[in-house]
Length: 169
Image 1 (cartoon, rainbow, N blue to C red):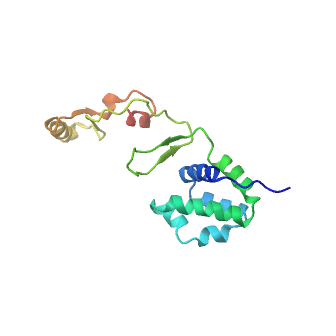
Image 2: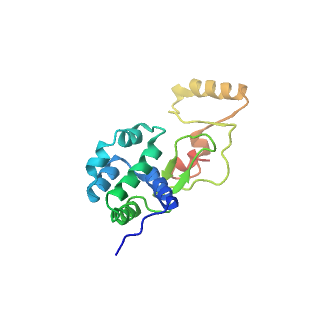
Image 3: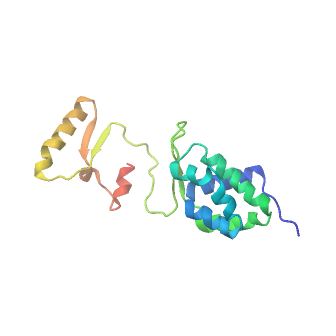
């Protein structure tokens, strides 16, 4: 029975999931599972682009996905199964609008990304709040105020037991 080949739309969706969730080890494991490890490790830009956050990583990832499937159409199902185990759905995708900035993907549901926008006029200071550091904090607060910003100690704005949660507020 012939194996269905993915459409361009399916390839792009798969690429997006892989780009958001794969590390170098995942690429190597996928190569081993699909008997394309030499192709993965021998690609001149794929793993380097991943490690260095190069602009061409996404394009190289898409090309590698296509090459793996072209090597054996049965690899498509292996790839789908591996990605489903490695990059479970339900992760949150975040990207800066129109900036081309790095993307962040969170698969474990450790904290919730708030729907409201952050207060761009708030400067949060996280530092040792020992009495000897008070002049440092006072200087930061004064500079922030002079620049038109509100300044608060991080421990004064913490609402959640998961520290990183407040970093998004």
